[in-house]
Structures are given as C-alpha cells and as structure tokens.
Length: 129
Image 1 (cartoon, helix red, strand yellow):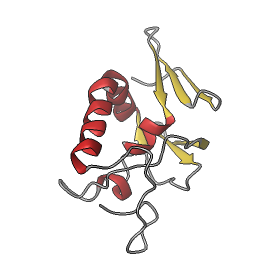
Image 2: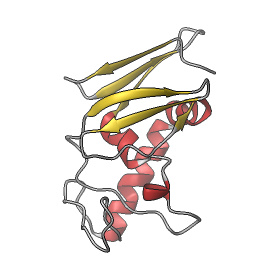
Image 3: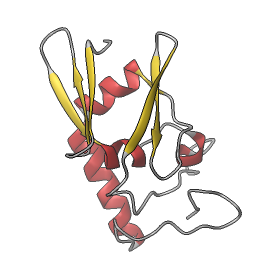
C-alpha cells in the first residue's frame, strides 16, 4: 500500500503515514534511522549489520520521493542512503513493536547503551561493531 499522506513532525520526532483504509501510523525518527534499509546499516548480507546507537535526537532534515516506489529521508546525522520502499514502510508500521524490541534486545546483548555515540572506525560514518 502507498501512503495517501506523509507528515514529518519535527517537534515530536515522528513520521506520520496515513493510508487509504484510514490507518494512521507514527514511526519515530530514531526507529527509522536504526532500521534504515541502507547497506551502511544492514550490511551486504546476514550478520553484517551495524548496530546503531546514539540516534534518539536524530531529525529528518528532508524527504525525497524516489520514483513511485519509495522515499529517501535525509537524517540530521548525515545518513541519507536508505531507500524506504512502500512495502518496507508498511512492514515497519505493521511490525513496529517487535522490530523495536528486537533492536533493544540486540543493544542489551551487546552491552551497549541506546544513547552511546557510534564508534567511528575504518572511515565509516556510522561506525562498526
């Protein structure tokens, strides 16, 4: 499904997606940033993900449409390589609770605080773990 309306709420740091069936979803910027579909975050295969931290205060500086299939947000931390397809956004909306819990569980398992700054290593802007 394609959202009929997309609103960036800078003050509350949420992206609001409204769908034709009347459903409205609000995805926090931090959530969108830590689950970015970019290779920088997801890696190039299983087990290559980079655990994201320090993104609680991130903002969406800009959103660009990508054809008729996606949006490309630019985040205030400089990250702008994630293309969020309509299908991926719908998946995030429908599974927000479990995806967020999984992220928090990964942080706990790694012994890393959600607000810890990203380690910058190897020249990567979002760090490595």
